[in-house]
Length: 159
Length: 386
Image (cartoon, rainbow over all chains, first blue to last red; front, top):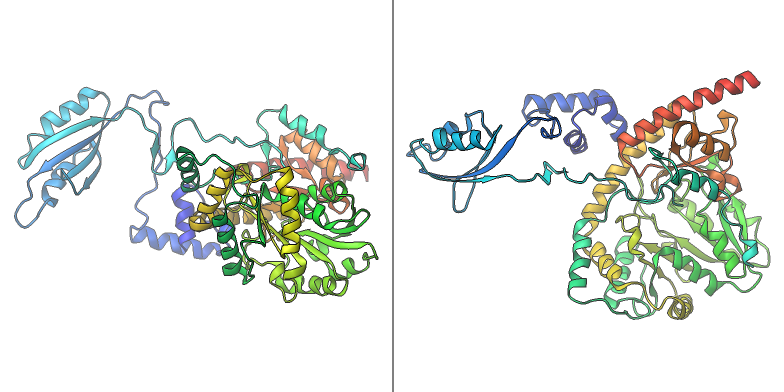
């Protein structure tokens, strides 16, 4: 069963028929496994990893460290929700160490991101400080190496 | 003697592939994965630490101990790492050393047909006479004891076989091997068992010829790291056997190769100690591709028995009316898909092509589409001729 998810994790477009061929599990069973995982949100979403720059679209990403004040009863969660609801926030994590929230924030320009930090994030009550790191180059994302391609370096025929 | 070894008849075909762009190659005999990073990283660190010297002729003792441990744990066969294990420059060197150690001029060595291309050449180089033992699709390219038996003469010295098989992907189950062991016992044969693909089996357990009762002392086991751990370029293999074989092989090895490269040996040690998880992931991926390939060829009508080892399939192309070489050459020229004609591996490979599925699923699917078109064209031409 794990195999079904491993295949989908690599390529979410793989059809149940193809998965059945690859694993030897009957198609109907593959469909049941997938449907159940979708219902339970074990499969959260099917999405596409894009390189927007290659598509001619400007994109700026920043990693932002946020120190926040935990609140009575709700801890970090309430303030974290205030933060992750912003559409600019692509990912949000509560982390251990010198700060509390790690965010990946997306904008069209550096100004977009800077404005978001200065006008939306930093002024929130409970936010004690932010450190913004602009991403300069994406090497690897979600297990996929994005630079230089993974071209086949083998000889075309060997015995 | 060199004249007896024909230059590869399909050299021209290889050169042609090298000159073409956008070829999907199903003709590569090595993994498409890079060596797992922890293995490469261990070797890099050893280079940084200055481990750039010779090792003992037999290879690093630690590695020989680890190889002996692996063979005992996996197959229950015990070897003394001091005298019964030799680290070689890949299994290729192991085959050559074994032939030179075993063969007296004129001795005959039995080889399953088809087999890896180096076997008959190494027998000839060592002054021996290779004798093909045909295998066929009907028996899923397994070696049958009766076919071995009828080819034994007073000059027969041994049997050189490689299962799981390159090129067919065939495996020999322990019960199949036991029948071969009877023949070896009866005729006092030395058995050289190339087990480079032994860990790469699907739906069956890895096995080792030397683990069969009475076979350890008449068998030279050749194994390595290239395939299961994606380490072809590191050139590390091993030979394990009775000290009379390993001693003789070591003598030749020390004068002709001195030792296997130390960085490769360090990497191999890491592979044996910590490589099982990554090797397992690669094997799972090969298995998925294998199923896609078998289904694909059978749907095209190129009958393909289920190969249960290595990363090869060996479909029959007889229904196209072409020979193996014609099929491979025309498929390359017309559809830019490279496969290797079965005849490159012996006369019994006629009517088949070797398809290596060590390439991405998307490449395999595209190749199958192109082969479908090609085969349709071949068949309609054949019908018009008939």
